[in-house]
Image 1 (spheres, rainbow, N blue to C red):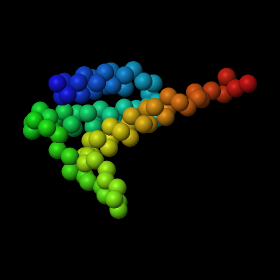
Image 2 (cartoon, rainbow, N blue to C red):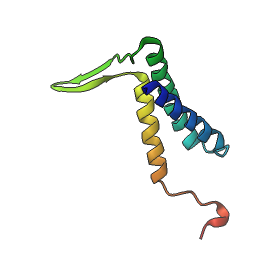
Image 3 (cartoon, one colour):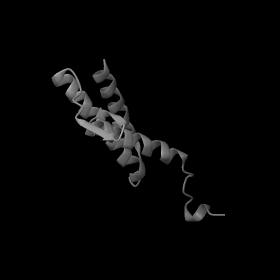
Length: 97
């Protein structure tokens, strides 16, 4: 079920990535991170039946849940997509007032 969801989201993001303007790297890079992370986790689910999480982080009494590189790519990409959506659009030189 989760692998199918990851593949569906990845397909939608690949379509969205294809429709982006050529110079829209600020959105293309985060889309690629989310696509790569989702496909990495989907590959784990399809081949092993589960995602292998192997990074554990502790600091004093603080414990962060175990995660993997694909999870990091998804989170970084998603945060960058949201941050890009919150930024005001750049005005071209002809639109400046």
